[in-house]
Figure: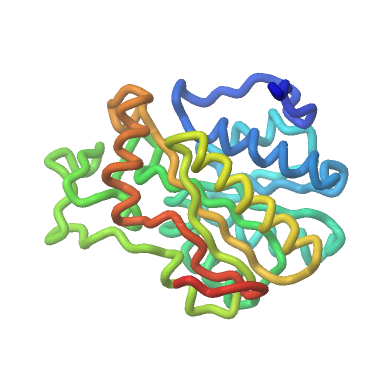
Length: 249
């Protein structure tokens, strides 16, 4: 029997993301999870001053835009003051793994019971498409690596979830957006992250492989193909840590 899908009521207006951007898919998944878990009134979002910022205007919940790269620290402070709330981060890979690397690591080290959602699109998006030292693939061309990323000059990208797997955290997983199967899998990861928080189980981080057609200079379909054929080879889709279940690192 066909199922009728409706826009989540938590989304209250159109967004400003580029066509084909994955942030909009992620925002919808967040809204669906919060509504299905009955958490809308308890939710506080902490977004970055970058592409994720659009979410602050479009989701009908409390929220704050933290300083660039400092989302995990801001979310930690909010959770300490409002421990009953569903506090989550929506930020990019540059924010979380480069500018805010120490904030992310110390939030994990302290096992703060928030849900951190990291959008891995392999680039600094809002600032015009510069190389992200953590996630830009070797050979990828950006505004700051016009000949393609060279490992001799910039080093190689690294899997931050492998690093965080060494911390005593509740949950770490990576999803992807390139087809319906993986979008559904990503939603289940997000649901687990929110449930963990409501049960006060500790720090959960869900990284999501997401396309950036504008800065990759590709069509939306080409960018989805790149995620599947190239990015996932470096950043595998799987659960890395599930303290309440099995560790798969």
